Length: 606
Image (tube, rainbow, N blue to C red; front, top):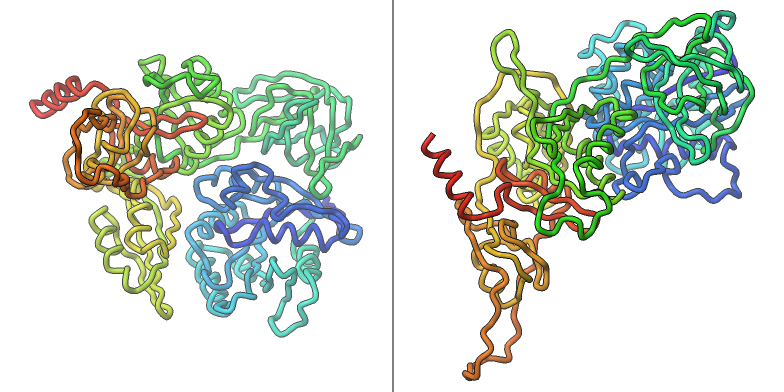
């Protein structure tokens, strides 16, 4: 049986191609958000981190009414590090809206999300967005999209995809560029025409797979998913079947549907609807909600394995406990394992040391967002350099590879190409459009760790770099990550301008006068390849000797203040990033200078 009163669709795209802005436009022009309502831009991005960074991190549900039909829309992340969110929600929908920038065209994440959608057998609708750009080239982009479909082995039916041209910012969509641009009605009509209604078994026993977890302050965890079979009512006793096959029962205390930006309480829902249920305090993604008399769990949604790992260590530095509320390893372990309940792409492992935990994720940004959330919650933690996860393949050791797309000025392309070649990359495409060069590479993920900040320097901040997981390939061997050494504080104290004025000639400083430092803390990047132990706390001697120019002010260069991602990219394997609610510090694993020297001698001898 096919329902005709519901459409379920997900919006997928590369980061910054306008997915969330398009959802805002659909909500407004469908009348779901009234003209009198004041909502902020990108209303679906509810997390502070999402608003600050301008990216979608968690997938979210909304619904609009168009005529007599309910359109359930799932907004998905556009960054490859959060691909697990995309993989989970594709099972809830019957089609996808593929949004592509009218100038940039298909990018690495476009390929990733489209490959997942085609594997689910859905027929996408393509929206070429940002057609209002003066440099837009929709005809070229449409050809590139078709070539991408062919390269991903799309079926004949999938190749016959409908295309619309849009500007989500200006609020219009058309099927032909020469048509009047009066609103997004053509897009909503196309969704009703080309997206099939869900195939359902309305009379069978209840079956619903949990896709995502929401949270409400009053009722706790809300399990969100699509009802595959049967009917569900508020107050009914149902069973949740875990991944290990064990079942537990609970009464549904709250049943919610989605309407615009709000959750609305309902008394009943049936197969094909996307709903949230409260009642299970420990519900997890991939579990199946079933009728108690008919336990029939669905297979878990396959999610790609992590590619990057870091060590999370309870903060044991000299300044630990000053800023944060949660410092101990027990609190750190509880927080990491709690994250596993909703973050299906994450892996956490205990190690031989009770204070060290190995955390694996899909990329540096994936783990960086987790660290940033923890520091805002009051946690103090130290993290190690990201390292790729390698495994044994048929032809020996294999490591993860990334597909990289770079847009930069022609004058900077030579330095970029040279650097990527030294990092084990292989060029797959090179195209020029005016003064801009697009370079595509297949490169080991290891080669990109620490490269982004160098890339911004090479391109004077004008280049863009996007990457997406491309699979595993042969291990490329060792290559250099950082060419310069660091300046290491000799002893604890407070930094002085007198000392820093001298030290700035030795390299680039990370600290300003008046900052608390400790022995083993990194206070700057050396201008030479070797590490240098310095004393940033040295004060000017106060004696009665007269000096010429004694009243001249100290002149200090601008210091280099690192954000979290930049710090993770900077450190080497013998260094750590110390993260607290108010500070990000870099330090050596071994703080004492004499102990470090002994360790270096032992390594050299072995």
